[in-house]
Image (cartoon, rainbow, N blue to C red; front, side, top):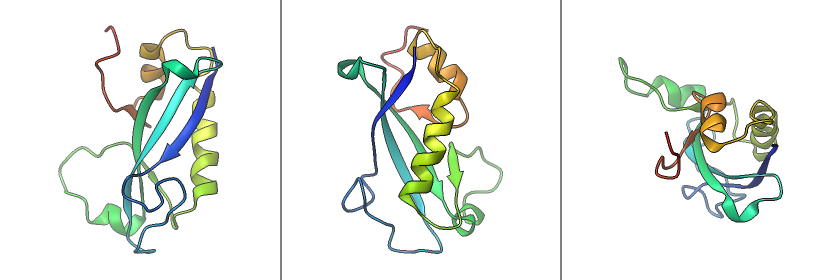
Length: 118
């Protein structure tokens, strides 16, 4: 089945679906994706990832794992949406959310694992 993007937002931005970070050179914003299998909008699942500038990446903790992050020179909703659209193509043909998570691991992650029967 194909994956459909229902929405992308961030509680760290105002408004959450179109706002911009206050610092244009150093931003590290948690983004949330609302995804569903095509034509199954009522069974959507939320995934998350960060959008960060190179300067913000330099300030992350050394000697630690990093969460899934899209690194951009400048925060741009259109660029973010294009990257997500391309990424979701890798999950098309999946038959379960567990398969989607496996195919997209390292790039985005589900906000909760409670709905996945592993």
